[in-house]
Amino acid sequence: MNQLFPVADPVVTFCETVVETSSLKCFAETPNKKNKITMIAEPLEKGLAEDIENEVVQITWNRKKLGEFFQTKYDWDLLAARSIWAFGPDATGPNILVDDTLPSEVDKSLLGSVKDSIVQGFQWGTREGPLCDELIRNVKFKILDAVIAQEPLHRGGGQIIPTARRVVYSAFLMVRTALCVTETDARAVLAPAGPKEHGWHVCCRICPKDVSLNRLI
Image (cartoon, rainbow, N blue to C red; front, side, top):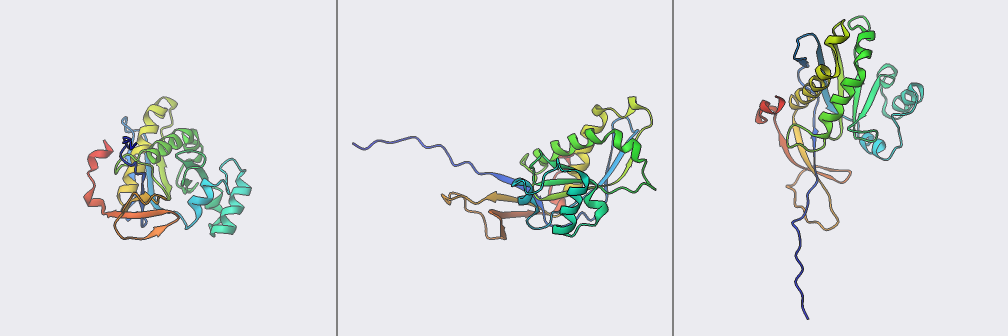
């Protein structure tokens, strides 16, 4: 006897990514106007996102071991390799936050005092991207400058975390971005022809001008 079984619509997993480096430095100020963070976004080196996801490299390593890995395998300069703050949106997330500021230009002590808040904002932003609230993938966010308030009262998490998220979005949207869709064994997803890498198909490319900045509010 033939029976009919209800079948749900297929679930498609998207991610958001960039295909070039930010053309402009992007900054965001805290609501109290006492702090400012500047970033750019650029693609990660080929294979790095997979190494993070597969725990070939781990953010829990000490700075020396982490630096040696990135310097040896991905040809990062030692200073940048030892200035990695976080992977995102979690410890095995396919994005990296790097402190690329210079001690001669930024008060490293003040910046360090808000590191945890900036990392939280970065992880929040990479968990829910600005294009369609999907995971950001394969992007390096570099902090280029930071002005941090002297008084602890003016640099609390309520000020810094949402500001870090907004500057992550700003840097991301200043780049030519793309939506990617996972490759499935069932071949239920038909993405338009485009580059394919590591099980992801680029299904559309988006210019910065095509994205509403209202998503930053």
